Length: 144
Image (tube, rainbow, N blue to C red; front, top):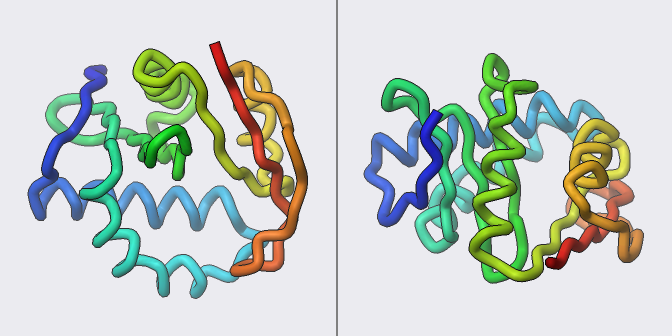
């Protein structure tokens, strides 16, 4: 597995990232209507090149990525077959190496993600309701 920062993704690379993004959101958030994620595809595809993208690849195929906007992790997405193999941890460690502090929002109902972030040193700062999905979420923060 190789971890690197992706600068100016090509259309083909954006296709791979969007496949990971949509599949990851559909799998991790069964409590949110699938149509919500599908309606976000165009906006996310447009936003991805403006984020700091840290990618994990295996045999020149992306198996995961993390999107950073400043100190905020917009999301971590790992291919289904690559989950539970340290990909998410490697992506998170790469982000931690780039920033002295990080924050993210995570749906409370996504228990495995909440546990992953707790295990990775993040602490819950506050709880709110995501207005777009009407789902409760945590703001979690980490710092060196």
